[in-house]
Length: 428
Image 1 (tube, rainbow, N blue to C red):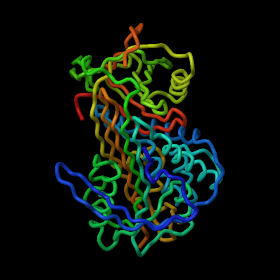
Image 2: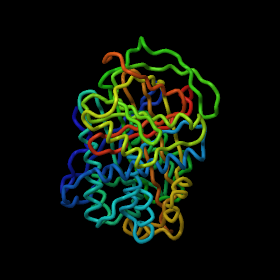
Image 3: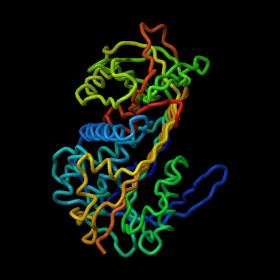
Image 4: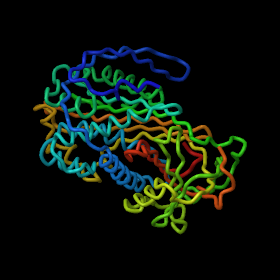
């Protein structure tokens, strides 16, 4: 399958383009013409490894999962660390001083010069474009939305073109924020194949002059699909301690590893580049609480699952789930140390001399896991205000019968496309 245009290599000078978006809601389809997109000039940057940025996104995702779970300990959670890191990364390129320092710390960005950072962010984003293949559909987009009266600095447009291939579209954020909101939502709905219809709720854009969006859509088939005839109801102890009876998929021949009390099972998708790691917390941890693996333990598990000849062969009993989350991230990001970006002390003057601070970070994600594979979608909006098959019998079976985590990653770069905590597989 051809990659999304947003993933294609950035041209030194990109032409102005117009895109038609088709948004499906229920059984009705509506067509919305997108505003023209203009782009900055992408710089030539060195080719670097995306690995450090994949590790950074994973560390950021685990931090965020811990904070989110502590605030909602009995809830299902799903989000895309890659999407959030991209949306916030576009904002980071406009930050300066202590604002940039705080954002880099929360995002775990490697210490580097601006050129090296743009190169690393570009490598990370470009790597996602290589994930599409037979059995795996991945599409994405990065967009800068600007009020016509306050266009970003040319240097900022060059930076986001270099790092993310993003261009700027003009929408009436100041004069008609509701119309602008609907245009942005229509774009996100199109880019997520209709899975996320209203990323920005009514009233969320009051006073914003710029909005930065990222969207991801994934449809990946298992390398060895689960057999529907083996799916059956089983018992699960939810995060609240109540019993539930989800439908468990059963399969054998998966690689497993253990470290730090955690048990990990790798479920590869077709093509060998993507895999889901299902993570079961220590048995003595109980059903409640917010267990998140420590970074070293997760690294050990990942290495053991990837290394040739290592890892045990196991069976798996994994619940079918359909998860959806929509969260305003301001408070959680503030808890992690990004509070300065949301207040009057913020410095986003690299975006525009008139830029004040981040007003809102909205994130939505869906994840459906079934016998055929996984379908996921995610979108992030950052609003910035201005100042005016079976493989034989396995020796054991890992049963995910209590709250567990799911991590969908690019096995080559470690980029975390989706991270989820299943507290109750019978709830959405």
